[in-house]
Amino acid sequence: MVAHSRNKTPTSAAKSGGQAGTGAGPAFQHFQAAVLLLQQGKYEKALAAFEKLLPAAPPTILERCQMYINTCRRQLEKPKLDFPTPEEHYDYAVSQLNTGDYEEARDQFNSILASHPEADYAFYGLALLDAITGHSLDCLRNLARAIELNPKNRLQARVDNDFQSMVDDPRFTELLYPEIP
Figure 1 (cartoon, helix red, strand yellow):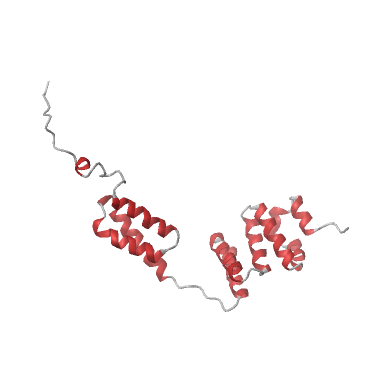
Figure 2 (figure 1 turned 90 degrees about the vertical axis):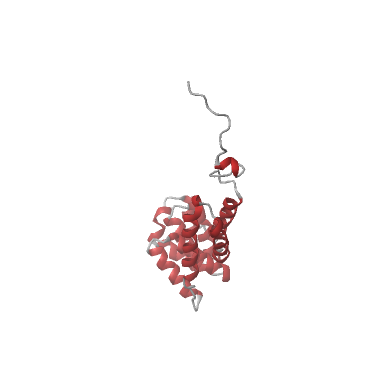
């Protein structure tokens, strides 16, 4: 039997207060805060946080810090979309919808509504997107608002093939063909 010495040298985790590799150190907390900023789309603040963290970053997160710095820089270099009219903005949103970039299309429709809350065509576009992506309740809500703002949207929706997934829903039928008292 081999006798083990009781005078072992402390591990690096013990020397650092038990934080090596656990993700509990201040550097990791700063890293998490920077990632949150990135996820929120606050690229300038996230970039500053990652750059500040970089010199002291432990090897376990150093590569990810560098990757996120590059991501922030790419996002900040993207040209901002600027549309002369809300209708042209709508055309862009529809083009995104038609190419299958549903997230971008939704962002653009919502952006139109943020600056033009009475834009019936943006509600109609959201209703189309919701129908295509299987969000029935949102489709009905957005289409109802589009029709409320512009009753001609009811006629358009009756012949629009993009609402095909909704035709068997009685609520959709009631919305398009309301009973006349």
